[in-house]
Image 1 (cartoon, rainbow, N blue to C red):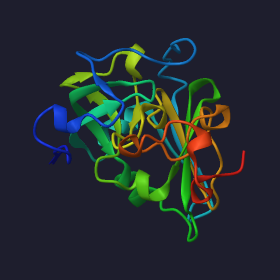
Image 2 (spheres, rainbow, N blue to C red):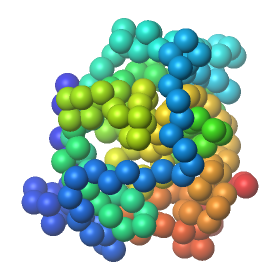
Image 3 (tube, rainbow, N blue to C red):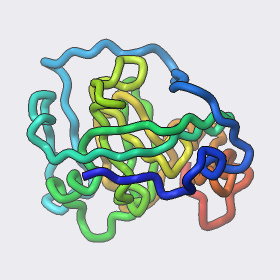
Image 4 (cartoon, rainbow, N blue to C red):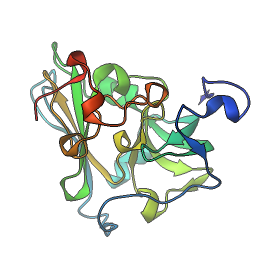
Length: 208
């Protein structure tokens, strides 16, 4: 299955306000690139699961999970937008099917290497364009771009799409992630220019 970008036809129509188009795919992340150790790697879904238990997959399990392709653009909160990315990986909705959340779950926290985290409304995680990517433009992700697994939430700013994904925590209340605790907007909609926490309205906030 391939999901097409939902905004506009031409490149100019897909650039949110305050963004600038950049060629290629610039590398941007906080901290060092982690070393991948397949024998130690796993992906955990935990927190408020319907069963009350933690669900876990090791690296070799990923190949047997449902797959999809999504065509989407990426928007960095600092201004660059790169276009026409082809992502291949596990749809976020498949994670919810395999590891159902308990009633009352409203948000998720995506956990990555080194304790990096990004919070999302459940409605953002269940978007048909949200996926756990393993490939980009037909090739496995490079280490710098998040190999072996990165969350891709293309309708939000890039800090909501953490590289080197290791866990999904189901939450019954919102809680700020790494950049959200450091002054970035809790929702991060690029079309509304939701870059910084001082722009938040009361309904956008979360506990620190």
